[in-house]
Length: 94
Image 1: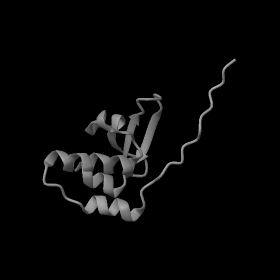
Image 2: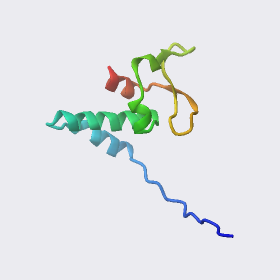
Image 3: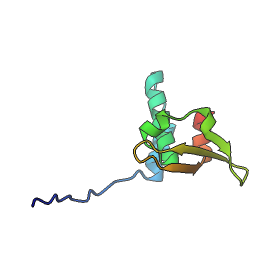
Image 4: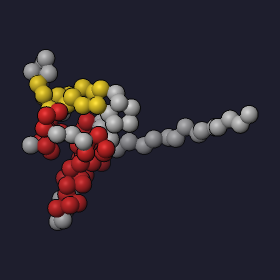
């Protein structure tokens, strides 16, 4: 019998300062600016790129709390998600 052994990767995360620096950076090329916005939207929602790519305006709905939420299904696991839309994420999609 052969057993697979995996080493748990140490995942790094952005600090608030680093995230702020990305937000404040402007790019001359529209494509790069759009990539920055998608990356930041992923950061503020916790969604992967493939899940963000599949979103449409129909996925944004008012929750029972009266706030905007994303209602979607994760592509990789088919898990249903309800994600509160933070002000930063709302700013990106408006």
